Image (tube, rainbow, N blue to C red):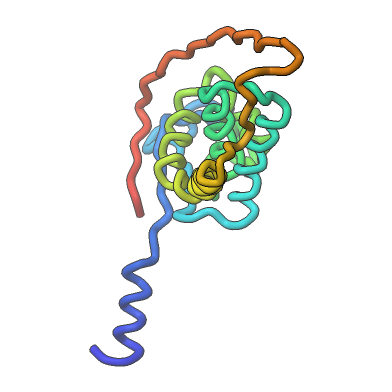
Length: 191
């Protein structure tokens, strides 16, 4: 192969594929997808808006709760992945005469809050978040880690606190919370 053919094949070889996540049907009308369940699609790479929404969610948490534990930051990150990163889903409304299989539900952050982030679907949201973290962790966390490393080399740390407070105040320890891992029947396959 020469010229344009070789370049075209090279471009195809490095283009990552979107990822499909299959789960049990969570449509409000019941088991609308008995043949294969729900399908959620994550893009292979985040666009500017998605990346910004995810990172700004973490920055908001740091501003609102400066003493947030790592687990809280990671939970915020996971929730942001689910809320902002899905490219599509197969969720439908209850069946009706006009839509015997239900009308497709538009994928919006508010719809994600209603249909994915509640207790009945936490297992599905958790699986989506885990797949998203595997796909996007470097893009989201890499710049923050590099920035923190640069500050450390300069003798500073992001959000560092002086070891000897001048006002005599001490930090109140926060209480720990724990959550259990919910096993899921969700499977992942790439296109």
